[in-house]
Length: 502
Ligand SMILES: *Cc1c(COP(=O)(O)O)cnc(C)c1O
Image (tube, rainbow, N blue to C red):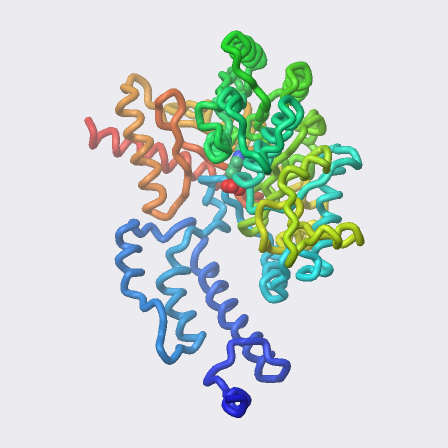
């Protein structure tokens, strides 16, 4: 048996061998992939090929999933280019302006190579000897940038969903400890927990509701507060809701402020919210998945003043920090808050290690095995530089203001957020004297046709029951001319569909 094991060689070794053949396999493979990707970008500056979902599905169903003998990477790459790469959404296109879905920075893409090649795991120090400290340094930097004190701490996450969940989890458990002296981690929720309530604006992200459901409170625990004319949480409405909750003998424990709502990019009044949170003993979680990037801005940094008064903060890097998916962070103003998710496992992060000063980041995460995503942010900040980051982000915010003004002046259009705070513009083609029903249909058809022609990818959304189009102007390579062309195209399509419907 030993004999046989020693003699075994594989037809193909896909591993890093410490020899010439291993190194060549690595570099040759990368070259093949690079060529396929650069060919795609050379031929495509449009957001999409225009294929319908069922066409894509039918094509992909023909692809074999595996191979008995193995195929060459070159052959597989050619097949993938034809079937996968060429019909992907091109996030680098300057007219791919639908969702909060960004083009990626080249240094961050290069960092992804390091991340997956070194494959460090962030749960315990002995799986991420240097990576642990890079992540810690970046968390410290972020805490300073948002204006937290040196008691603050944080962790990289898979994104806003996870960060929002963590914020509400810690808020819930801190409340149960403080008010009822109950350790939820050990004993679960008390029956009184049925009365717990979370407040957020009606424009808050749906993951607030999802988190409440997963935290055993039910979506019923989320009380939505009306927004003002700028789509920001209304403090008067918040106070009214708090009074109603008190009358009903219900127990608000957290308020979520959105710093950059998904549709409008609007920012809730952070100072007033933190005052209200303090007065009512609420945990203030700031969902800055989108607006957190303003820490890098020069012209718009003051928009997020007040964020430093949060108990916890969500920031996404795979949005306005231009990082490959996934990359986000969760920050707390007091590192002791992480006690509610600590668990010591003998094999991974035993208590004695901590006493000896060993750093195991699993203590601060709800994930165990975790990617070294901090590296790509670090490489981006260094290679791009803070000056260029500020210029790029500021450019997109200035562009959005310009675009909103332009569309607002254009005949047959209306803009919902005439003064965008970040860089999203919500509007619709709205020819005079037409019913809402027809206008809704026209805008839906326009959105689909733009994508089908491959010319532009805009998102569609609903506000007050009506259909709107949305431009999320994250890409600093998007120029005003691109937008003017899209507006002209929308008008032509709108006229055409209008005649077809009438
Ligand atoms: C995108 C977004 C989220 C969700 O974050 P993911 O990274 O997609 O998990 C939460 N809140 C806001 C405001 C967002 O824009």
